[in-house]
Length: 449
Ligand SMILES: Nc1ncnc2c1ncn2[C@@H]1O[C@H](COP(=O)(O)OP(=O)(O)O)[C@@H](O)[C@H]1O
Ligand SMILES: [Mg+2]
Image 1 (tube, rainbow, N blue to C red):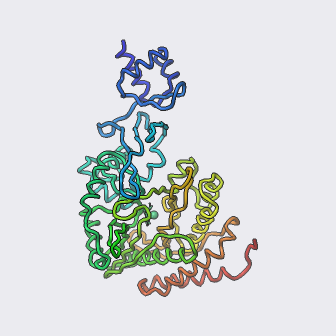
Image 2: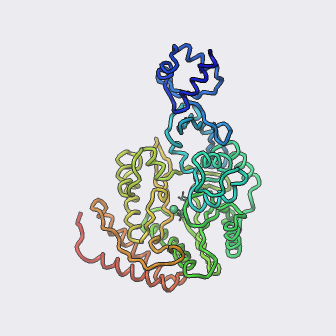
Image 3: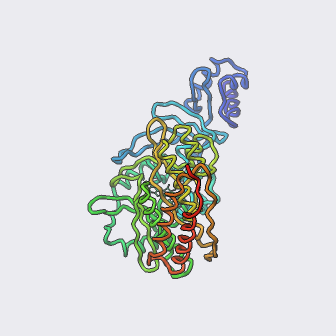
């Protein structure tokens, strides 16, 4: 009898998490019988909430193994601490229990873990290197959500931010910290970077376990005696028009970050190395400290998943987060300014993964330094660099006050690119024309506020 009830209980929980009332009704049993039934299942059932509000879920297996994973946070000194437990449930739901065992139910991967999933170049390269070891499809496009969680829980030791999922990832992190490869001396960059880029493309070396389409690897450099974690983006080594354009754009990213800083906003610190035809843009990571320390960060996309709002535009996101008291008015203004500046430098890549936030007090955030800003309008398409007409979108009224400063910064950016001899003559001409175009905007009538 009991076995039959257990089977029926499992069957009911196959579709989703259910409350005690639903289970009592479904099984036609009393509360004490339900409690006994669940207790007898020896931890097979996960429960969340208390008293009448208690609900029950059935864990789902991930690749034939338990779908229950510890999640660890690495602190700024490199120590790992248990942060909570994630359990994948039947019906595609997830149960999160924090370190105090307080449970919460999610209908998809909890928002604060979503950035640990890989995308872009890093993900494709990761899939290529690890699929055999993990017994996963070779092509990332064929991975399911469970495949991604499985991979992240086994080899997610070096993702963006300070969290990692799974015992295996923790073991890899501890081993990595113990046998860390010697830091690269800053002076040897010119000959080491091309080698590392070649190894990354050949799949002989882990690329950076972070998102974004631009090819990149991650290293720790010796910055005059201080270990410093960097992401190195690189352009193709071959001599072609397309490769040249990618190099031009990386040089532009360096100049754009500088223009943002000159306008008094924070941006990732970058260093440019040109070796042969190849450009290497080194970005100091703001989610790493010293050799092993890590700091939390979260994408604007994940925060929008938290508040269940659409990823529409950076300007709307700024107002939304400010209204919800999630960011202060200064950071909201910075985000609006970054949107304007991006429009004016032809950065068409204003998606919600290209802004990150740093958890601050009481569930709020500070805006992380800006990154990834370059004139992506001019990115090659299918091996060609087609002619593109730059027409910045009209300025929305609510950001009109920020226009003069964003315009100044954008003009400075195009001007510095137009005279930078590391950039090809062809692209310098485009930068010059865009500079002249924006200068015209500084004349004429304005909205006076
Ligand atoms: N300086 C940095 N410190 C820490 N994380 C960074 C930094 N720059 C970028 N990232 C992370 O890496 C991801 C990819 O970087 P991004 O500059 O957007 O690359 P791409 O140009 O390829 O899109 C970002 O979404 C962000 O999560
Ligand atoms: Mg990006």
